[in-house]
Image (cartoon, rainbow, N blue to C red; front, side, top):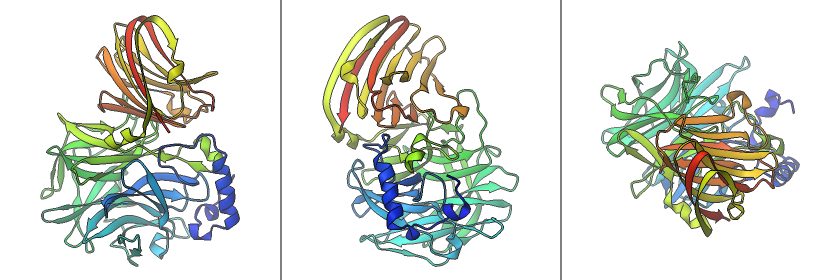
Length: 488
């Protein structure tokens, strides 16, 4: 389908009953719908937004274009949960209404004040010459999900010295007021974040650019997030335009963080080297929130900009990751699945053995939706696990002792995705033992290494009957301990 501007920039309010019926029928016939991930009812999902614990529940919104699997007029779609596992759809929460948001409601964040949920977002406008005008805006929601939008932006346009790539406000509170960072691009086409301050969440003063040690690092820093955990400050960003560097930055765009100290008086973040958040193929635009018990939880977009996916033909695209708890250890950010996911476990089975230069099929470990723990200790060579195995298909994860790497290979994972960026991802690893915790859904896999020291997040699109599992040891001996739970 050739998508014109008029088709891409339609408001959800204009959808007809026949259009919606056709979209739903296409989605219903899709073989790649997920079972335990947040996904759109139809259309395209991207960035998570407004992730907040409010009114005794977890509120989460995501970017949504309803009319097909392309990027067009963005709305905020709302879901809620009482346990971070089971999510209830509440439909469109924020849609374009005013002139300054005529071409979409872009990403942003939420914060609770006076028993109200304040939702900050970027209004996107285009003129007749397709010039962009970005502004930072506010909507306020009460406990009854009644939402009121301010008719005028809080911040109109970017400061001097920056381009119209000015979006994705993240707001937090300190002892001396409220602060906001906004992703930006300098006029020399390098990325940064800009800092604002407010006493009341309504009137904002520009403080200046937040200085970091990376003055030339991609051309635009999207979806910034700032929080404190374990005595450290963390700045999350999704920098666009990074060049590959060794095993890092091989996707079209990437996400990562700096860990260090935020000095608001100096407007500077003193941080570590940039840490890539995910070593897989499909992870972008993560957002976090704080829970009442003190945990910091992250959810990301399991997809990428400028990327086509096989489900596009079924008129839907993308999903969100499972929620992940964050920790900082020795200056490194760790991610591991939230404990609440254990409630989905059914029918636990275990297996262990030692292999020597062989591959073994484990029929009892087959399936499409499960959690699997696979512990491997190898003497030499390569040892690993093959998932979603079928005729000509397999998704492979293994330890390579000779090259000192962990390797994730989706070369034969089914219908190809973004092969111009490669089909194998690697990360440095020097130990002889490794523990993989794997969350497999119908068209995705999330792999947590050694309790979250690294992660591989990827979409895969195998045939329906590619459900086999096998383990292998090449060029040596390796011991395996496996434990699996079905996810119904």
